[in-house]
Image 1 (cartoon, rainbow, N blue to C red):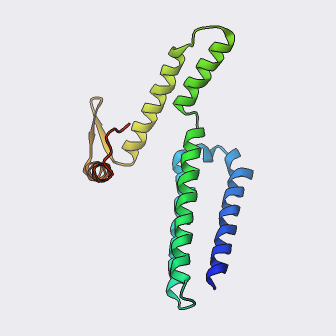
Image 2: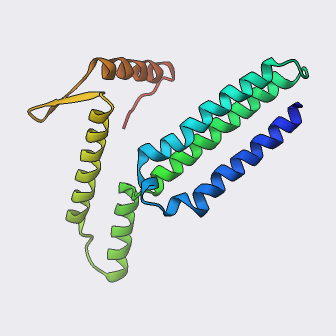
Image 3: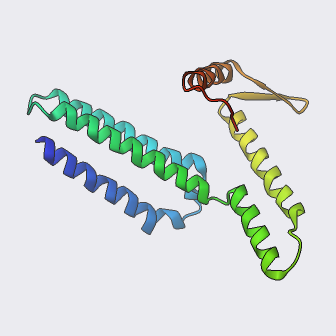
Length: 170
């Protein structure tokens, strides 16, 4: 396979992957879950990475390794962008606040922030449950502590924040 063919085939794959989600999967209940969406991107990305790396090892042309890096980079950009946009579209707390304030302003009323407290509490509970399911935290009498794996990941994330000189975290 030539380098240009690999890139064209990969762009076709991206288009098909996106269209399958838009036309079919986004209408299913299963694909409203963060874990499922992540796996929808992660599993094909791993397969694609192995395929591209395998193709780049086979002697075909001198620009095959560069094309492999391009394809893997495009996969990363596509998947991260998709996941970020999906996450933002899933009833983001900030979007809920903006809708609440906008609706209240149109009706000439004060915003009902008490309803938003429930949204925030549900999001927090969902995040904590997800972290527990992944084995990153454990709860003891409503006090959450990092597990061994959670500590390793937290340390790694702190290292990244230090390397990029991140001053604030959210």
